[in-house]
Amino acid sequence: MELSGKTAVVTGGTSGIGYATALELKARGAQVIITGRTPANLEKAAAELGVHGILADQSKLKDTDNLVAEVGQRHGKVDILFVNAGVAGMGPIAEVTEQFFDEMMNINFKGAYFTLSKFIPLLADGASVVFLSSNTATMNGAQSSVYSASKAALNKVMKIAAQELAPRNIRVNAVSPGPTATPIMKKTGLDDAQMTQLYDALIERIPLHRIAPPQEIASLVAYLCSDAAGFITGAEFLADGGLSL
Ligand SMILES: NC(=O)c1ccc[n+]([C@@H]2O[C@H](COP(=O)([O-])OP(=O)(O)OC[C@H]3O[C@@H](n4cnc5c(N)ncnc54)[C@H](OP(=O)(O)O)[C@@H]3O)[C@@H](O)[C@H]2O)c1
Image (cartoon, rainbow, N blue to C red):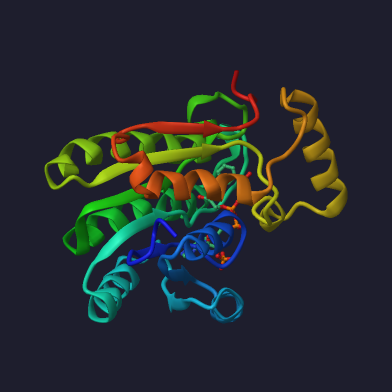
């Protein structure tokens, strides 16, 4: 129970990697708060996990202000901040609309940026921050310009935040998964046949020939949040089965 006594905030904890990480952090003894933007999903996930849920759309700065205020009132400080909420989407540059661009950037980059920014006063000295990035941040896949750019920007902020927060012994790192079995791609509108086609094509290209279960990403995040990772900051960890090799 190496995380006992620690308070953890997981954004986008209602499904996929965020949900699995909330479960893992709780199993290791942390007191966990999850956020989500869909009330029914938040209520269900919080009840299943036995954690506190706070409704917050991370692309809305007002929601983040309210989240920080509520967490501050209830817990006073935060030891673990997992900035995970995100969306996926594909499209060739010639066809990307301003609406698509803004939505993706507002959640994946601006939202993540201000989640960190606004939580900084609440972070305990010695806290751990993890950004959920993506292996696409360092790859050059066609049709992923906006998504990949949102995650590449996040990696840059992670490194600068690690410098700025080091005097308070706050560590900031990024985890970059490859294809992971979560509902994220289905939410882009792909049907079952398209999902199977996508996964089959990816499995063919991944040296380890499989998609990750979200628990494998959660255990890496939990490790980075623990004292065992006490000398690690400003680092990006790829967990992609070798896809980006
Ligand atoms: N799965 C992969 O293959 C993969 C690979 C690399 C990186 N990632 C990254 O991993 C992170 C988690 O994704 P996932 O695969 O676990 O997907 P997921 O199952 O769809 O989970 C995403 C979570 O974020 C929440 N969320 C989305 N937009 C939000 C917003 N504006 N405010 C608050 N919560 C929001 C979702 O809630 P709602 O359901 O209410 O929208 C959900 O709880 C994302 O940042 C994603 O880019 C995923």
